[in-house]
Image (cartoon, rainbow, N blue to C red; front, side, top):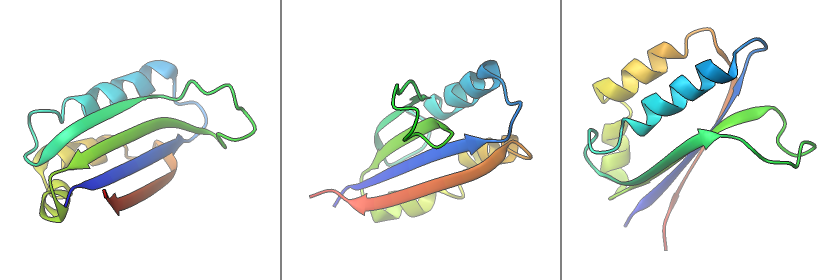
Amino acid sequence: MMIEHIVVFRFIEGVSQEQQQELVDKLLDFRGQIPGIVQLSAGVNVTEETANHQGFSIGLRVTFENAEALRSYGPHPLHQAFVASLGGLLEQVIVVDYPMT
């Protein structure tokens, strides 16, 4: 069964739009390089619902082939390099994983 992986990122004050776009570009590089990814999209939040976004400025959606692919994603070197690049930039991250029906 495929798994949907949703992540939203809220950055500390002072992280520029350019820095955020660089992080999005790194996320997009996962496509075709991390096994088990069926689909991936990521981008800077453009919602006009300012009362509802709560400062979360990047969204990531990854569809994995199965739960094992999701488990393998975390320790993958490309993912680990991305996580390391976030050092000191994040205020909060929310992750939601669910099976697709």
